[in-house]
Amino acid sequence: MAMNPKIEKELNEQIMWELYSSYMYLSMSSWYESIGLKGFANWESVQAQEELEHAMKFYSYMISRGGRVKLQAIKEPPTEWASPLDAFEASLEHEKFVTSRINLLVELAIEERDHPTNNMLQWYVDEQVEEEANAEEILNQLRLMGSQGNSSLLYMLDKELATRVYTPPATDKKN
Ligand code: FEO
Image 1 (cartoon, protein in one colour):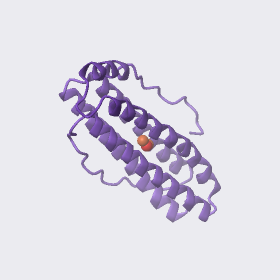
Image 2 (cartoon, rainbow, N blue to C red):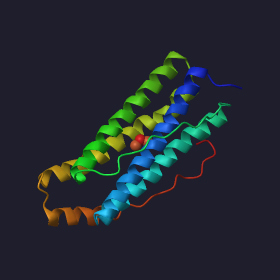
Image 3 (cartoon, rainbow, N blue to C red):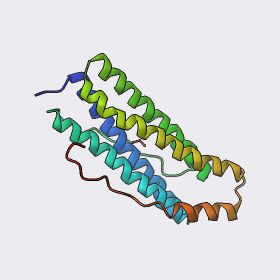
């Protein structure tokens, strides 16, 4: 059993983008640690773990279809941002890019009549709605605080973001 080569190529690239996402959010987490925003750091570290999960879901799917996973170079992420607002603007922009990648994959799967891949991708279609909404919600709160930043509101948001917990996916052989 072999995968459609066009799909195999794009899925391999997508594994790289998901791993880059993890790398970028981990970089954000370490930047937040360096400026003392521990809650923001926690939120980004959970996000980095979720992105690893996204990459592994593609990885397992490719293996289950007899595809050949070939890992690609992951570019260096930025290491600093001007402010939390700047970092969340970058996150939302990045998630919109990932959404465009997922849409491209869905279109390719339809074009190539690869129904199982199209079916698998629907999980990511839903996930991207959530990913963009999460970034947008925090971005809106940061915008409300104003560009100068209101330190007591920022402190409260930091407390709230400290509560995010990583939930590993339920063990399901099909995923
Ligand atoms: Fe896996 Fe945030 O997209």
